[in-house]
Amino acid sequence: MPNSPIPVITIDGPTASGKGTVAQKVAQHLGFHYLDSGALYRLTALSVLRRNTPLDDEHALAKAAEHLHCHFNGAHIFLANEDVTNDIRAEAVGNMASKIAAIPTVRQALYGLQLSFRQHPGLVADGRDMGTVIFPHAALKVFLTASVEARAQRRYKQLIGKGFSANMEDLSKDLTERDARDSNRSSAPLKAAPGAYLLDTSAMTADQAVEQILSWHAAAKPI
Image (cartoon, rainbow, N blue to C red; front, side):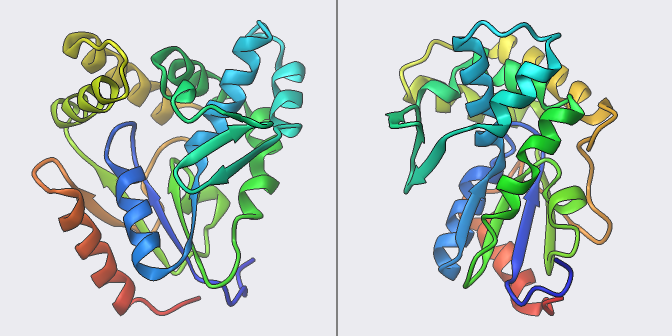
């Protein structure tokens, strides 16, 4: 939708870079809709884990993604009518999500669902391929990152805060492995989109990152 009048801001980046928190704050400030594309992959992952679907059964994985019955209500995420907001943040679900996200048929199955979030008055979308694949004509693209150490600290606090057990060494290793998997996959690899602003938040607060993105947005011309 290169000529759509509905503005889109894409915020891509690796796991635990803070993009979700930042994107939500930007959307709230602007009164825009918000898309957490990673949640769609986590929802798919939770669904296939519950069904014990084999990772090598691409048809079944893609079918699970295509028939994903989910909806968002504020900060709460529902699979069918079940609130799975915390369930999809479990490490096992995150690892499965990263694996199935490398499967082209799964990504294609979720493509249309992600596009449907573009509604008036605008959209802030975060993920790994929002600016490169899903919304390549976005008025503003940001690639938000942080050091592995900073991201592991954030992930640790997030998990402990939700009541999950966590280990810093394991988290750092997991993040490094996910970075490699996401960056090296053949379908929609994690990378900065052409023309994207690079924002390293290792030493920044979420509010500082939001302020910077809003400044870029104010200077951007919708496409």
